[in-house]
Length: 487
Image 1 (cartoon, rainbow, N blue to C red):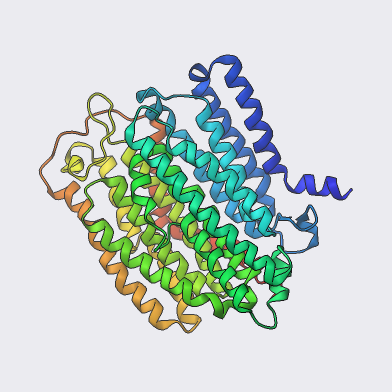
Image 2: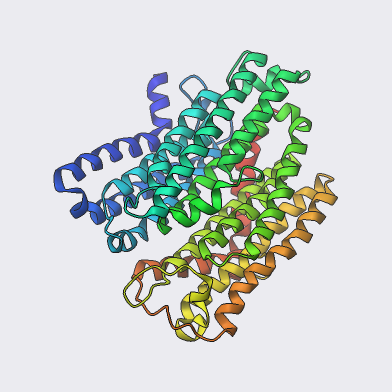
């Protein structure tokens, strides 16, 4: 009976696993290239089904009834919230991939299947209640991601991106494993609840080193400074649909995992890691803002933007309060919409031959030649900058509010000041599109799917998005409460 209960709780992961295997067999039988587009849409249908499966879990509190496999896995509200974002982001980035891969001559059925397996790993990451479960999910996601980064085998940039991601990812995994082993050695357990109980009376130096190494390994996965060095190169070199995927779904999973580890496993010793998170938050905001200023490649610019946004999200973690965790989840939901919209707009930048354009100079005067794409990209840039009345402002507002309520006024003030720096490069993109002479390069046609996704993203981050604040806030608060259930 316990096994059947556990199997019911892990239904999304089961569906992803079985669907991935079935579609892999179908690809081998039908021919990978010929079946690529069909299998892509079937994979999107699988992700949509998984989203429906996890929706009821948005109201699940923490407790034994949502624990599976002896406490290794939890199907609580926090996991459900993160999985909804992961599956939606993965499906959106899959939908825009076929035209790009077909043009590059790399349309293969393995691509959507790798995304399914990566999504399964991400689901395990955010549901993990044990360091061993954490590592299994992390590596399942990472192994698929390494292949995706190098998916264009004939493109030197893609091969370089895959190699860099693999080497640095292996290093981060080693650091994480070392931290996990130290934590186990000084607490005698690998379960989050057990670690929290063992650290209740104080933290030994060895366990403190373990905590530091675990957070360092996770900082690589979220591309937080000083472990961000891979991000601009991988984002630029990887195929654009893959970059869109990396910037959205895995980012949600990695930040969700970091929240679980910090607030559940090490929550009783928040003072031991708050300074680390505060440094990473401020450094990520500043480095992300300053690094983007001189960028001429839109994908590299969005990579630094990603680093910058991770800094703002980590301010919520630094607060170490339910309000801070809730603010992080609200910000993540808005961030996913902004990221998907931004990369979809970049994918719509094509020349007459259908080749991808990604340089800042290519969008000069875009408002006069392709006003709808320019308007969508401008909305994304204004929202990323946190300029009201766009929804991106609300994400920053709730994070700063949580920091102020936690007594971290200087941190909030530094974050607000640094966000002004970041506004410069976002506005520079808008200035080039609306005030420079037209370059006349963006003349290729885009698929209807791209236009629909860009419109949906623009609608979500528009002032209309504020209609969702009460609903989004409610689910975020329910999810955040799970992390503090044992406090």
